[in-house]
Image (cartoon, rainbow, N blue to C red; front, side, top):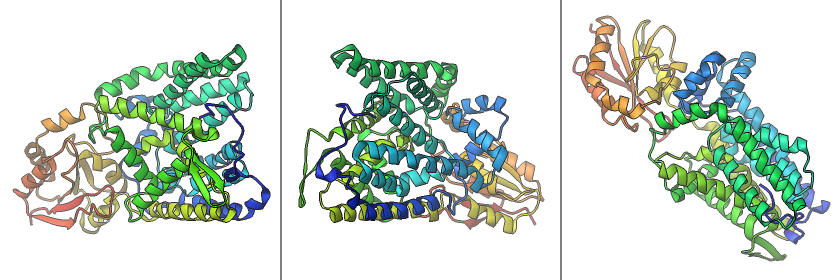
Length: 524
């Protein structure tokens, strides 16, 4: 987040900032920006589980949001912002994703400023190009979740710390701004705790190591701002502790830190398409070069294990944040999802951009940047054309054959939020095992409730409600964690009473959120 050893931008040839190097880099960055603008606001997919849940919670009155979030497991800031956004722009798919897109676009000029400070004008444009077409940044700029907000706040916080430490502008306004950004991060995503922890640990280390009071002053202010951010979070702390004790991450197993890092690289590669592994490997190599790469001459770039001064701080904060978060998650048996790495994405993106420019030759540098951004753009476009959920296809099949009053069952309930959003009107919607309409998922004591559920009793109630005139449509997937065998049991119980007809197959190869559709027609 800062230069651990404060210094000026690199003066080695690979970090040159002469204007003769700019035209082709600027042109490439403009193309990348055009791609980034397009991909941040266009996607073919309807909302999947997490997005639909975000919308359903944000649509609640603000006074009811805290209680809903106690059963969901997230802090409230993004939901409050989305609530106000939907009051103005509505709740359609494009509208609700527009907030994340706007936040993603707002990040780009700040990335330019950050790159200019750390490595000059060339790095500034390359950093913008990398972030503009980054599959990770694109994905979370067109998804109705808080991760685009988190990325923006991290970049703002980084710029404030850079002002305070490296630009010697340790003003009260900046310290207050840093405290505000820290609190906003805590109220946006819980992995921000580990980021602020990393900043706090680093501040204490620098205070201890600084030779005099003037050198300690900026770090003391940063430490105090971090504490103030934590104090501002105290009103929400009881809710977070309740969530931690009762919700957790029942949807997946805990990941080892090494496994989590590989998932982060894969997600920065862009998704489940053919070139993902290649792009992830390129991203990893670019980060290594960004931290260690030193141009010796026009033909040679070497690795300096002492690391490059302007990027040492970014690597340190990203590594410490990730290490703390992964260790805590693993010890507490909490799952890791690559989207949590939004708190470190600006650091690793700048490192990757710096790796692309650590070459003396102008045209070698341009070629590396062009190839890297081209492969990133493949992942960005993959996010545009890929379908995150199969439920819209299922809803179309239900609409083609259903009659008003028919019953649609979501098994498990995790299919309900996205499914209920796209199902035709006039149908009765229920979810397994709670028998509610499926707009929310109650994660409190989730595994225990699912284990205690009875598919046979649920089927008996369904059949009684359907009577002799209403068809039953079962939207199901038996592979969800804590539901093993339950949805298959429900299918078997219904099939014992009515003839099943499979309308849609479970297509896990094509869809991230996938399910099958089986119809149990009303008796003739």
